[in-house]
Length: 239
Image 1: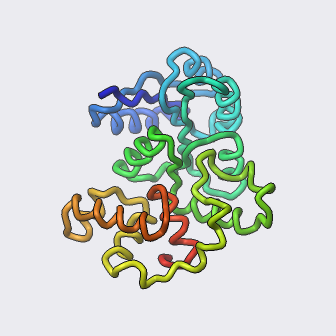
Image 2: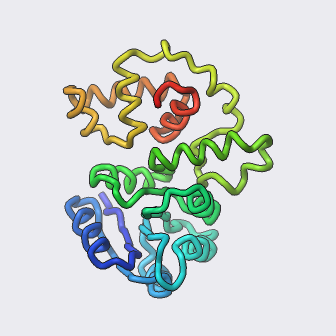
Image 3: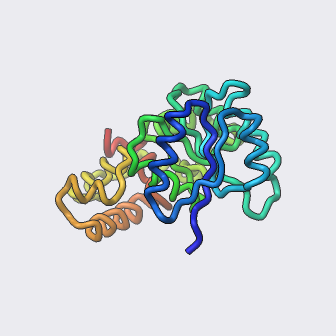
């Protein structure tokens, strides 16, 4: 099995070292490059062409959003374009929507737990958007404010977690469709917990968690965990 090749662009040395150390605990992950600013970062990304670039928004010479835009422009049409995972302390609406408009694939907060960061990396690598629960609310609110499909082209992730064609159905999800245990699992999914963490908190096996997750996705007509979380928040299934 090939490793997930990751590059880090973060100006704070301790943060960068901490992320690298955490990622390298997993054999399936390889850190192929690092940079402390956007200029060095872009040159490095062109050279190593990683699977995922973890980019901080607050870089000293150019913000991570602009770097993401430049990277996506360079990668346009590439067979295996580098995916971007934004890692930042900024969860304000403007930063979130600007990052996704620039082409970011996933968006995480810097206080993310190690297991959740690994989950975000794997989800992003597989071509889906991983969105922090707080960020999911912002994306959801933006979608609710947009009255027509033509207005939704720049504010959501490339692999949108909200499908405009099914949006009208999200308010009608019956809470009794899910069992009490499934609702508990769904709440933890919204909080960004991995299967292992859910199993630990609910005192069940990981295999049982996977079964619950599969049932939840089927009942919510969701393609992945992030889409299920957004639909759960929109319908009021969880808080």
